[in-house]
Length: 489
Image 1 (cartoon, rainbow, N blue to C red):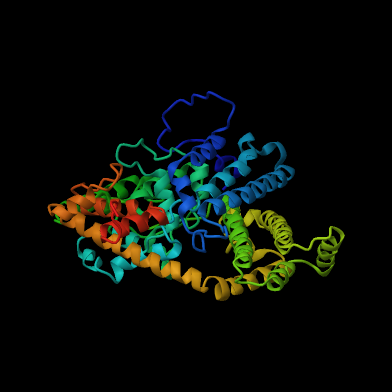
Image 2 (tube, rainbow, N blue to C red; image 1 turned 45 degrees about the horizontal axis):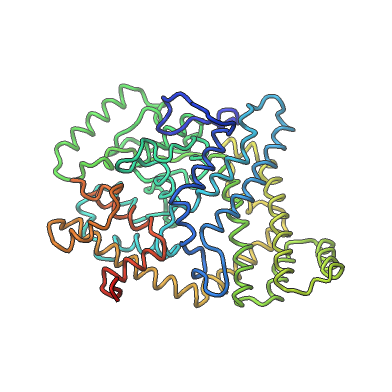
């Protein structure tokens, strides 16, 4: 991979259109503005990050988290560009200077595909099909589609949200630039390759979009499995001859036409794709890693889950002894006694340190990253003292924060709400002739093709509808359709 090819302002779905600029914004700044003003981005303000949505103490939600990640991402991208400019000079395309803007935009988008109630929402969608009443659907859908829905993941859903052409909407979804879209695909492979973690980058419906982006940007395929049961695309299989691919696709289509089931669009897409990570993904991931770990500590302190002494000790552990002394000395010099102010200062210091460490790590391993051989995240490779401190914070977060009662209460309630919505909506699309089904279907926005004759398309429309809800809206719908809350009461 090379930087001049990796940064492209070509837009998905509008490749054929002539660019008509009405202002001096770059195409990457247009991406940023397009997200900021979008409804799915605004809805993040009512989606849980870790803790329940605020009562008397305001903690992070998905929106504030995404804005902070974007801020750190902008710094990471700009600092990396300055280092690349020193290394490559005039060899770099002028568009490479936009790395900071691209990373910041991808950071805004990285959580847009997350369903209500955080990871419990993801789990509710997955287990509805594996453990719940949706298990019978396995015999009615294709293997590729089944892999997607039983491993449902917010990362893949974000890519779908930005690229899928929903009913009545334009081609290419948000019509974002290729570089921005590539930057949000943290796991650049299909669901069948997800393994036990259930993490993957794109649904089968959007596989062709990712193939197109990867080819344009020069993202290298890591693995190309043998032709078996999927229809293949030339761009992803250049090592195979055109004649062989044509023969395979003809045989595949003939096989599909002979079946009564599994004939939807999901079945004819290549579901065995795996690529190297797009280099800027490492910066988006680092910004997210930095923010969620450190900001969760600050939120836990505000909610009195962690004491000030515990929070101070965890944050100071990122620094050398000399740096610790300087920080504590500054507290005394500025007569800081307010613990909230101290925690905020410590948080800023830690984020600054980790940002610098990740930039240095990126440049140290830049050749491996471009070659697709770098393993792990940037945080995994920072210097020993901050890496050990980060690992300690992860352990504390897992044991004290993510297992705290407020968090568990939201997860349990959210799981039940999501599972119920999935059950009722799937039953409605399976039996649309019923009166109650018609009432439920009538609630769904017209952009979701919930009346499509193909079952897989209808199921995906249900998932799109429910995963796009905010926590508050999901609770409201749940209460209304279960008869718990009535508009007239």
